[in-house]
Length: 154
Image 1 (cartoon, rainbow, N blue to C red):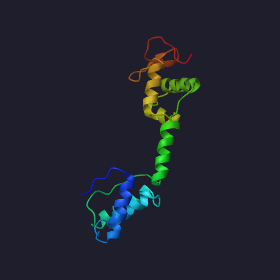
Image 2 (image 1 turned 90 degrees about the horizontal axis):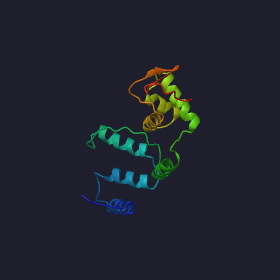
Image 3 (image 1 turned 30 degrees about the vertical axis):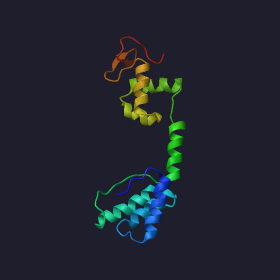
């Protein structure tokens, strides 16, 4: 057993272990690690090899399924971009339309989130901010609302 804290150290140790010639059981896994960290394969490709070894009885574990068709650097770049730039925000018109859709249809928060390409938490927050509460829907002036006689979207 070997505890390693840095990716650069993983590469060095994996390379040296393979060069030693004394590694048999973990040879495939070490190659996968090196290939993945050198951006030669995607996470899906690495997982596919591990799943094949489980099926053949070489490895113990579960058959895992994931959808990560990226190399390591592509995945990291995508994650950095998503955390900085892909946070979808609705402008005032989109917010009013979302509220109107919620009040005039039977769409759920989950359906609205998909429709407007935002998270369910964003839908919930917008509805609360507009004075609409998700639990009940009572009719008001042609629109439905649960806040007395408050007209939403006017």
